[in-house]
Length: 173
Image (cartoon, rainbow, N blue to C red; front, side, top):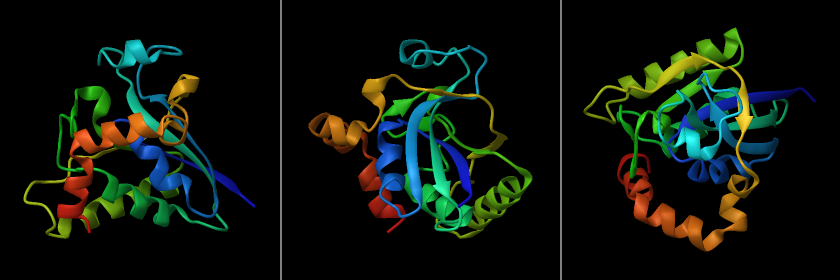
């Protein structure tokens, strides 16, 4: 077994855990913050949009069971890759979409995957999801972890209000 990491920003991290959490080979999906300058930022700091961090998920997976290309294929249909200002109801730089690569192979695969989504004709706008090197990932506060399980009603209400599912149904299914 070779445990690898994949890190993605896709708007509110609550909505980014469940789509990855239920796949064979995925060991853990952590909600957290990455990409900014503030050391060990809090949710209260990140949500201001002033720390430079993104809400993100860090996925630990066994690459002998699930490969990075499959993880990328799971990522794209969770987001609106054409929105430069956030995701759905969550607006601001902390909610923009980013693929954070952990090595050169991930970078190449992410670039190829983005180019394929952009060339697919699925969207009338260009894909603006950035591809950046992974940096320090700060685990979010405990109450944010596995939110879709621990706070099911709040998760479902937030997701319903976000417009995410309607976008996915219209553009990805």
